[in-house]
Image 1 (tube, rainbow, N blue to C red):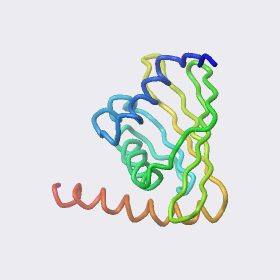
Image 2 (image 1 turned 45 degrees about the vertical axis):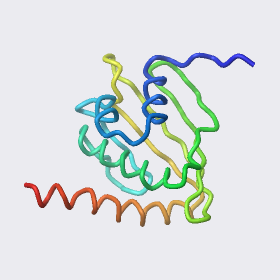
Image 3 (image 1 turned 135 degrees about the horizontal axis):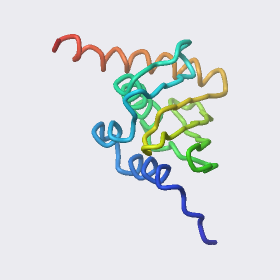
Image 4 (image 1 turned 120 degrees about the vertical axis):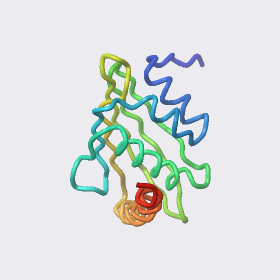
Length: 142
């Protein structure tokens, strides 16, 4: 079965994920004015730095045991919907990443949705802990 090639933007995202948790590569894909919509935070998170922090934290939490995988990918050029599955602490997590790329090929809108509720609650707690850890060095340095 021949696989369909993805848009250049989506392929860059997938390649970055395959390459591991590299902050520089992640930052290079995110627009300065990106808006990130978290499944566990009420308000949109604005800007490249906030988006990178949340995505990096999510990679640490959801990719902790290498079970994270995309199971369905809808590539619509400047938009993509990627369904994922993973397991953390014995809890099955199913979610969707909805991504939009700007004219420059950078991600300017990223929305994550999760299910079931048990997974959302667990991810919220782990993300809060992870983000506090990421913010602490920034506070200490400046």
